[in-house]
Image (tube, rainbow, N blue to C red; front, top):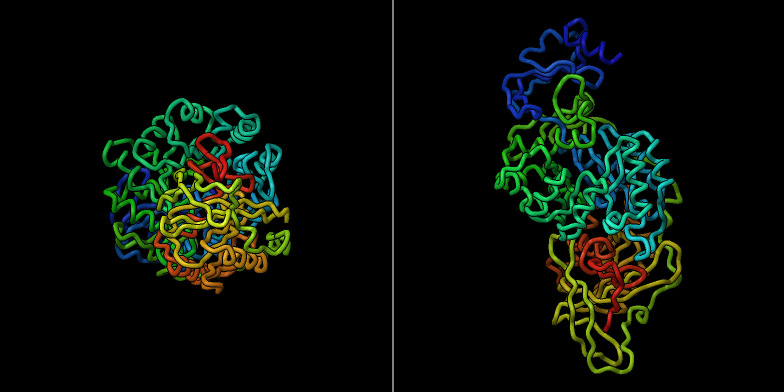
Length: 589
């Protein structure tokens, strides 16, 4: 038995596989940093942590001199979506593990909205083959808002019950349908009941700014964490109601700086605060980092390094009920250990996962075979016909001289949008984009079943100039096709291109494709490396800039415009959605 093996190594009766010597132990379970410590590892687990592990060293034991560097538990991402990186689980791990991420808690509701439960199973099976820990949450809201959108698939309580029996399932994914929870919807509460009965964690997602009775009711419903807070009041309210505060710092959603003040400024107990990325673009992963990036940012906000590390290790492990296995450097746990020279400028020199040195100085030391995706996963973009400029017109009835339009307003680096109102003078009986007021057209096309359904509306905040269009099949969470543009011909060209390539993101300017990343797996992911996808995605970002857009991560802002559970105004295949009222509004009054 493993326990006997660990005891025998700890006593020196049998040798360790690996011994790390002379490191500074970042002991997250006590909040201490203890110098001159050794770690003995056998069968992928920690057998001994102490001042001298010499008694565990045998002829075949590998000895690694830490040279006074910090011994840090492997980092855990408390909430994230692999699909947002535009790569497979394997390629995501290949990108982030050398940076110190040895555990991820993944909600695959993106692929679930395209392929349903079989898409989730794909992710679970691929996760099981990784050299690090990849836990999967069963998506709770597919679709995210029933009645307001049409996804490619749907999941219900029976699907949740089945998935809860699979190895590798850690809990229920973010419960985005907070109005359903508050209204005591049978489906939502049945899914949470099944999760609770299985002894697993219920993920939260309360995107409303209302901290009154609906928020209290949502907490009573069973959600155990939330990553949708954007300010210190949100953080305090969630912590007081017994929810774990997941502070996210991804490519576009930057909510750590405001919420961490609940700890640094108001003195709340940091044990109830976790760090996560939520959505990280391939370029962020390739050039800036993953959880190491989050740590550096959190520490830069005034958080003590030991507290930041706790929020990315033991706090997360405790929350998901796996602290017996990971999240701390202690006997019996998986040997997930990072050697780090500087905690403030956090960067992993050596990454050990499950007792194996998997990376040194950012480079892999072990083989990681590719995962074979089936052919059906590559055929998800289905358009009813070839699109033309006429498909993107917004006609005005009754020859009105002025009309009022509902317009989606972008908020840079935040998930919420604004519900704006603009006055327009029709041109030849239709509404055109207006670059002088930063108003472009936005269209959503059904792409799962080739129904031909579409909606055309208006959006403000991208700063587009000239004749251009941008299109994506990454459109949280329905993952229909979104096209934004100033010119109808360019919009049709961009849409048709995605239909030809099987999905991705594309930029068209003056009739020429100037940026493109192809994502053939579910229209969401590529099986190429993060580096290659980042390079191709960079052409998309350059295309945005060439079209006049100066937003940070505009492609991710675009991809969220169909997420009809985050206020204030969104677009779906059924129309414009006022998310504060969960009702439809017309494009034109």
